[in-house]
Amino acid sequence: MVTARKLSGLQKDVLALYRSILREAIQKDRKALPSTLPSSSNINAESHHRPVCQLLSGSSSTAYARDKFRKEALIVRRSDFKTIEYKIRKGKKQLEILKMPGVDLVGGASST
Image 1: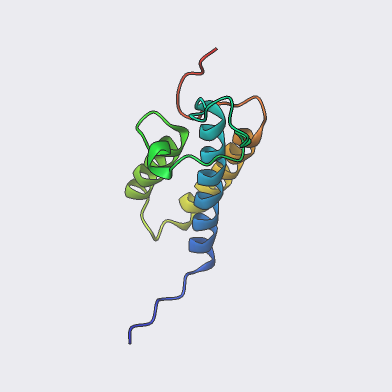
Image 2: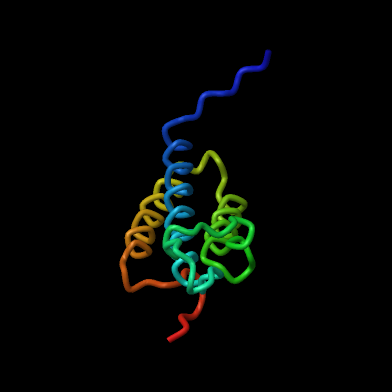
């Protein structure tokens, strides 16, 4: 039986940030996309969940966040702790901006 390697604290921080940003981006995408439910439906439109594959299309906040993380992972070496810590701090600041109610879309032009 193969046991999984334990993650370091830094790896846990990166994964936690990644999950938090994806969760927030999915929420923003669900709010930004028009509802596919009929207006006569008794189901609350906010409680309706879109399939994740629909949210991962090229122009969504979720796709942008995922692609950005992957590009950064290719650039930064695993042993470059200072850069990783810097990018975690930067990512946390960007997450706080993303959580603001006035922000609709990440990585693209707003529809206003």
